[in-house]
Length: 442
Image (cartoon, one colour):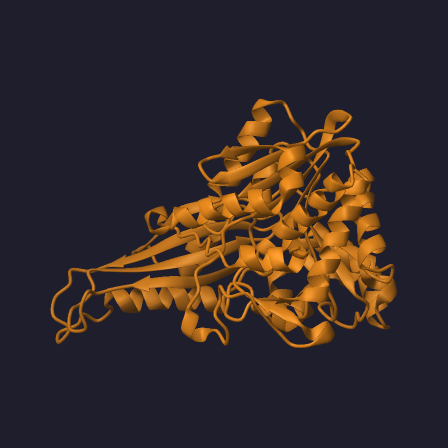
């Protein structure tokens, strides 16, 4: 009989890679994934009603004694592309390497996000097979294009909204159980995202008449664009502590050594200093205390001896709670300070609303963490740095959280969207226990 790990590995081997240009997506892999779910999880499909939304997203309903105030557990079936030459092991072979507690499954999607998806299904399968019935309705919402447009999750929200459903708790991927992320704090912390930053892309464009590269103008389009990018780099957005970050620091203050404990307990006074210091402690800490902007895609001339008539740069901006698309755009215009560089918003969304870090929904999460992942784990609010499908659910629920119930090292977190993505087997199995505990309290 197949074990949970066997089922996990089988699903990891299906290359459900999504692409921004959906004509490049192999939809047959997504169909195979759905068919495999039906075969591997018979109790789920017998006890829950499943419907397909937006072509490839999945919405399951587990009826409870009470249809009001349901819980939604989210994940996504798609994964990002791979560069196979960068991997030490085949990215879709789901090989296990290492011994004992260090045994790990290496595969694209092991953490992001089939790790959560399969752990949720394992927990539901076990409970359904045992005859468990939730007190309130439970929905499983699995989007198919979170890594690109997120349209599947958005369509699921519209289905639920049309039925008048307002979840009491929504849980998607997000922060993990970590150690040593916050300076001076060594206790394991469950970083539960109560909000996420907004995301936008600006297009910077510089133009010129063109011609042969042997006779360039004094300020070619490429130089004008490079100057604009350099100005953005040299003048970052200001630092500050957003409410979720203040709450995080206040929560972990009792576990921090002096003088950090006093600093974290007196943020009304020390907040500006703490934000300034955090910005210098690496990319993660910098990203929680300021809106970030970075040039990503660049384009210019079509040939090496041709002047670019148009030079473009995509600027990816992640908005800190409290900032807006319009406000960030105007600041970029001021910093660039060149009216001959066009600045257009390609797309953008403001930061999500902030969910409360007290009350019934929060207690349910914290209780599930303590009972399944360890009573020594401190559950703390957290500002999620990346965007997730959960942003769509804020339209129908005030209690949207982002947490992946896995104890991850720095190296494991760094492998997300990169090569050698992996998760330790014991860590993944404990994650199933978290979802069991959360469902049992539903």
